[in-house]
Image 1: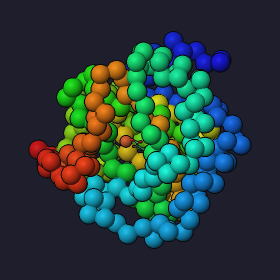
Image 2: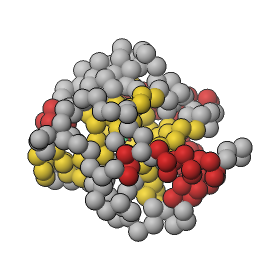
Image 3: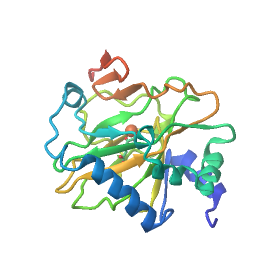
Length: 238
Ligand SMILES: O=C(O)CCC(=O)C(=O)O
Ligand SMILES: [Fe+2]
């Protein structure tokens, strides 16, 4: 593997994210993308927004293919390079979650600023290992916006769910790339363009992190708990 793992570690822990380009083959990505389009075929093109969507200013439909026996998604997980990369960042003893495909219909809202899990316990976090089966470009929209270094800066400020933040950078991951993103790092997904947008997240957690670490997500206007489907804290900018 010609990836400099020490440099990857350095960049990740400095910025809270790192992009690895050209990690996966087109043929595998085409296979997975076809499975995704097949699953979502047409049904969500006019996705109605739920209460959660409205509260969170977010429109994304999750799918867990491995829970439905769509086993091809394990081919990414089983790639030995992924384990090496993950160990380089998290150290030994990490765990994985089943992968989550995130589908956003054309013209939908993307995802408001958030942290995937509460930052108060800094050693408990998720590592997003995001795979893109199609280029993110002007047509798809949905660029990923991150504020580098904020995995070490505590709670994202209360405020406008999609409002710009100082230091933000937008990235447009290409097919075959992997984005490694710390769950405490402030991030959002821009509005989706004229075609659907998908990403697939192979989340991992460092040793000692509870399995439900991402149950509560921190938005700029609330903390939301997915299992109970409740707003557990309203947040108001001062
Ligand atoms: O789809 C993306 O690019 C990022 C999604 C996200 O916020 C996440 O996986 O936690
Ligand atoms: Fe996220």
